[in-house]
Amino acid sequence: MTKWDLIVIGGGSGGVRAARIAALHGAKVALVEEHRLGGTCVIRGCVPKKLMVYASRFAQELDEAAGFGWSVQGAAFDWPTLKANRDREVARLEDVYRNNLVTAGVTVLDSRATMQSQNSVRLVDGTVLEAENVLIATGSTPDAGPDIEGGELAIDSNGFFELTSLPPRVVVQGAGYIALELACVLRLLGAEVTVVVRGDQILRGFDDELRRHLAQELTQTGIHLRYGRQIASIAKNGTALQVALDNHERLPADCVLRATGRRPNTRGLGLQELGVNLDAAGAVSVDAYSQSSVQCIYAVGDVTNRVNLTPMAIREGHAFADTVFGKLVRTVDHTLVPSAVFTTPEAGTVGLTEEQALRQFPHLDVYRSTFRPMKATLSGHPTKVFLKLLVDRDTDRVLGFHAVGPDTGEMAQLVGITLQLGATKAAFDATLAVHPTAAEELVTMRAPAVQHNL
Image 1: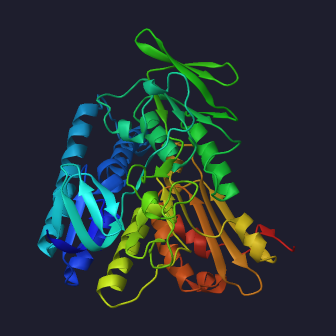
Image 2: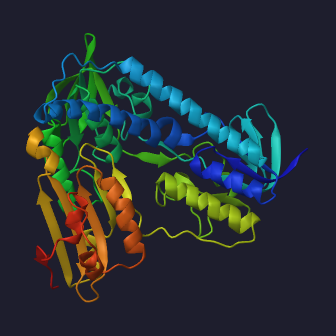
């Protein structure tokens, strides 16, 4: 029997990075993946979603073109063409992942693995693999929420990428970034979209002002938001569907998308039987070095439910491989995480929200700018850009950035660098504006809109 230094279960971004770096450090590595290499991000998440976002935004671009003298007649959208091109790109990326692993010396096994002991895994064909260390990198999976009557008639975010045509009427359940991003894609491509929101606002956990501004923008695009509601049942209605809400409202639909969150993908792996501690959500509990309660079993990425973002999974996987096989002990900082929500308009954020900042910094200055972007002056589009900086008055340090508008995800990446360096508001003020841009507002906001004194 072959003895491995490392067996990785899961071929997503975190698992692939860990396997490749460990192999480059000289470890004998096997990676087991039951579906496709690339995981959620490449196969059924970030990458295909962003391609769909690009496709949907052409509709708005065409609409705005008239104000700039363009006459766009006869434009037509074809979903099958988009799907075929998107799937071709995903397949190309999967091949890149596989080739990178093979080039690094990793053995890739297309199978499902479950834990047999602390140092061995069993494949579906009965093959048993033994290793000094096992890394769990199985990611997360869509969680549709509580069972409802007719729930089998709905799709989840995975099912969205299997749609063969654009459904004319869609009901989306959920108000997180996945639900809203897919809702925007469907709406801009021409579907009538209703989003059922359990709470009183979208994007729980984000800055409240950002949430309110984005909700207004989504409403302007024609998305119907139903706050304080849940789907009670889904039923067939001829060739269509009928969605019943918990207030007895009926919504006709051709597709129901339930995107109420994701759960760590640990079911059936046999981890608890071996003494691996899982939290209430089913995530693998790990220490700062991604080590579980069992010394030779580690976990990285969404399966640990720390910061569920692809770049974080990659960083965790790399740090694990360096620490265990590269004699370079490293941990990963899970604070100050830039992120973007690829709705239309998109949102970008990094650092503390206003609510979080006030719990630590009683003398907080809030700088805010809301304005009509230059493009809208000719296109006539009603959108407005929202930019917000949070500053600790005692130290002048910038604590948070929150924005809604075109390319604010790009802004969040760059502002994240400045926050990592501990930039002050004076440093922002001393930076020359790039004109005309939306981002120049970040260096021209002179007076705070709100000054907190708690």
